[in-house]
View 1 (tube, rainbow, N blue to C red):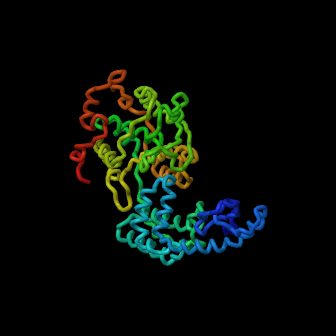
View 2 (cartoon, rainbow, N blue to C red):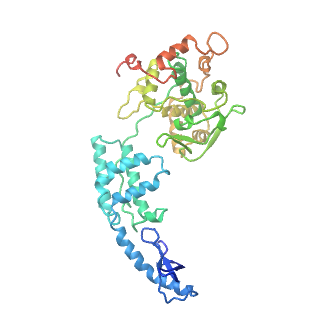
View 3 (cartoon, one colour):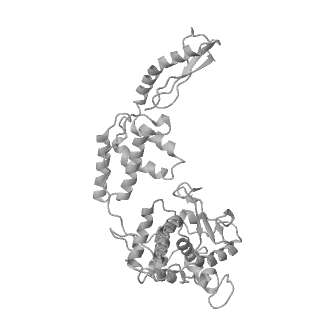
Length: 425
């Protein structure tokens, strides 16, 4: 239970300029009242009497403020609550749309102090219906439900007192929406990876980006902000430090997904590529200019198709299986480590998994496919380092790089024409 407000007292000048004891109190919504005058008969040197008078008036002030709080709808409260989260929560834009489209049509007009368990259950039932009809994926519904339960909890336990408007949580003991089956995720086999990074029809920029994503096991947002001049890559000692990530929603740099930094030894076979990139960048700026975030997964699959990496599981999604996404390149690195027999705790630390149960998924997969899997983290082809295959030294505009410019644009990001080469699946 919150501590009962007794008021704060201070001597201030009243309207006619004479000093008098004043007090202010904490309202029911956690906000503070204005300074109000106490009895003028209280002596200026009797702070005890002033405090007793303020404590006597406190219940009246709180009762009046409770009546005002009762006028607030869930919609108005949700706006205050989301505004308070803005800047602290990365998904705030998605949270606003989820609240608007799936929660407020049911709860919005209700009094935030009095809506109850049955109202929350109506939201839950509607979300179940949307899953059954195929209007929403169960994971999207899980995010909406988390939003609802967090808001209800904050009506009672919010850190900011102004957001505490109830003494009970209407979500307590309400069962969540149904959960669906997790769709199987994909990863590349080493032989498929070698075929992809060796294909000169794929822009060099894409091949390098895929190699770094797998060999460093980083999330897209983490790889996108790695810098040569930021102390992230220590080529002398072969160590990579992951301390920040790109927030694509806010277009800012923030901490990692888990809020923890990690440091680990680089895969030996990725060091030549990093050394080549360091030389090209002259040790400044980002480690690699990744392709645009727009349609990264779809374009990745198109380039895989161009490189004749056409295993159906990578390209075709089903109700129980997802096609390959960019994030699955990180999963590929984790799976390769598990197949290689790396210590699971080391895999967890390198990948920055929040829980060991996530790491266990890769370990179990590795145990099932290890036989005939291939050699993880193979040596990278010389062409990936900017070296012509038949002669030493670097090339700047060889015939192959000119061909890449035609296929993929100057920066290797365009994929125009790939759809014509790829049969319908």
